[in-house]
Image (cartoon, rainbow, N blue to C red):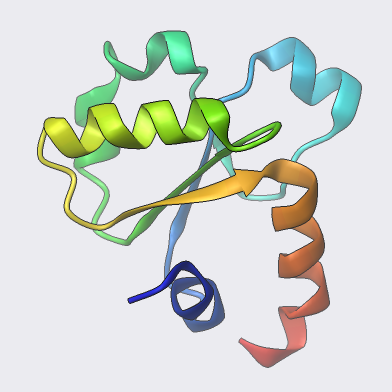
Length: 99
């Protein structure tokens, strides 16, 4: 399943891997769980226990890509790099009525 299909389904779990100060400065996406990249390894069980597809995102998609790569090496089967938070938020808001 592609990221677009997962987002359209409405069945996913958002994980924001940016630092808390970035959320305060730039904003966030409603419903996303903030687990900074530096905490992903220590909190991997929290992420791996999620039953829905996991969509990771950050400022540009770089850190979320690193987090996804690590989590997949730890057994994450249904994970996606959502890229940058601003683009992901715009996409979710634009398609909100179609879910």
